[in-house]
Image 1 (spheres, rainbow, N blue to C red):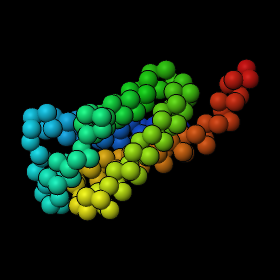
Image 2 (image 1 turned 90 degrees about the horizontal axis):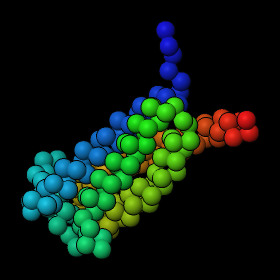
Image 3 (image 1 turned 180 degrees about the vertical axis):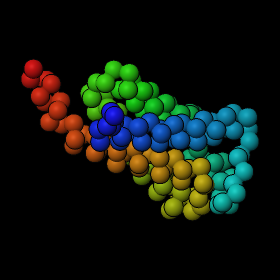
Image 4 (image 1 turned 135 degrees about the vertical axis):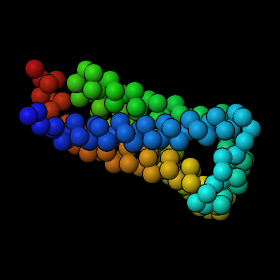
Length: 152
């Protein structure tokens, strides 16, 4: 029986979480370009948040930026599984800092500026934060392995 290493297990979770974030951001992007606001069944502030003046950066929908980010994370995780190259997961892990900084900014906007919440935005924030935490784990666990490989 082939036992999965802790890094592979974390990479699988990374891939799944990136897929969740990608699905969420893609849905919001589609709704944005259709001119609609997705229904908000759990929280009531989706319309307020998703139509606020903060829903675009330099004319680009924030949701589309999320698609690019999550697609990158998902793709890098897939590349890792194909190549078995730990450096690919390390690159993805370092890139999670971008997602975490964006999450901090958008959660701040929702909480203190817009003063409303969106279940889709919270889903993205949880996905991004989870990727960041997994990224820290991957960086710490692969640091020694990558040094050995580099020295060969």
